[in-house]
Image (cartoon, rainbow, N blue to C red; front, side, top):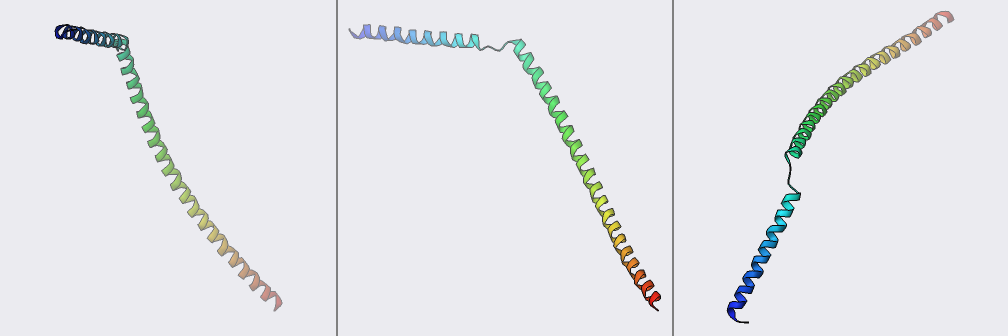
Length: 108
């Protein structure tokens, strides 16, 4: 094989490799092409996802507000309970003093 034959054979091999690569790309592009219907569906799904995220954010905000209200209500109830317990404690102490005073009056 002389130099000219080698160059021609190499050119044919390179051309065949190029043609095979181009054909493989064309097949891949043909089967993985995104259609307008697919794009429309993707747009619709993106819109639904956006709406769902907005609803989720609103729900989180509502839950945070409700939690803050309940924490405030709990703190107020606990304060009222402490006040009632202090009042009950002082009433018991006063009742005990009155019993002692009444007991000392009866003994006299």
